[in-house]
Image (cartoon, rainbow, N blue to C red; front, side, top):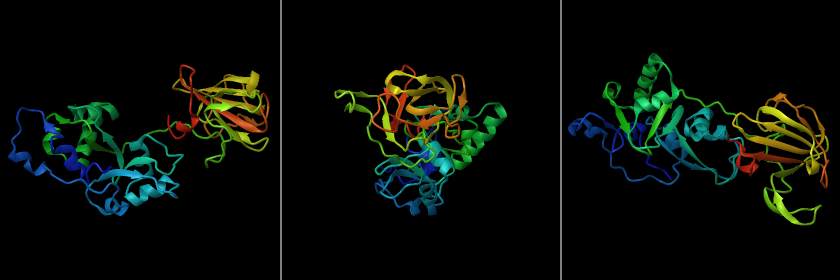
Length: 307
């Protein structure tokens, strides 16, 4: 769980983690970066990270009653934006047992994905232009306590190493529940095989059925362009929105649609319709689907807070 309660300076530049790629480095010169530390507790107390002057990271498992990621960020001595960027998750929805990487710095805690990935390659992922990259590289070296020689010669990392990238933020365009409130709604029928209450037979259910009072406003789960807004068989009044990554969302059984084909709609802001019970339906609710770029239905619950 806890990879090691160590500063990222040591994690990034020590052990066999990072080696200045210029022949055989002098052992004595790098002796101070060598570490032999037993693993820490599975889940260290947040105050250990928050009070430490060294840059530490660990894994946190969400406990019952932990409802807002902002509180966790404060407890660990980091920021909401840092946890969102590091975990690539907006954390609109948290649940007991959910796991995330936590740390006590400000920025994106980058995980090296392959052996021999260089510092220059990592910097190039996030900055363009020679001057911007040079300045950012200096910031990364300082933030992680890397040897100054890393500014002059290639520095290689091993897969699994962590590097703090100060100031890096992630702009999220993630899925949300299609209502004004982002509290977890009651779901009357989940994704997967089910016994259809009207057709009286078992069939695949491609989305979530979310009961709401008749007329409840419906908003896009994610920003995009309307590609359908009309009656469609068992869906009744249906709106389909296509998103930048090629995926689509469907909103069925509406009592009223308020957009037309070609409209650009914004997540959580553009009202696209109201809850109803049109089509094959037993009562007012929203049938909500997410489909991949090939048109295959995926579980909407697994997409909330993610791209």
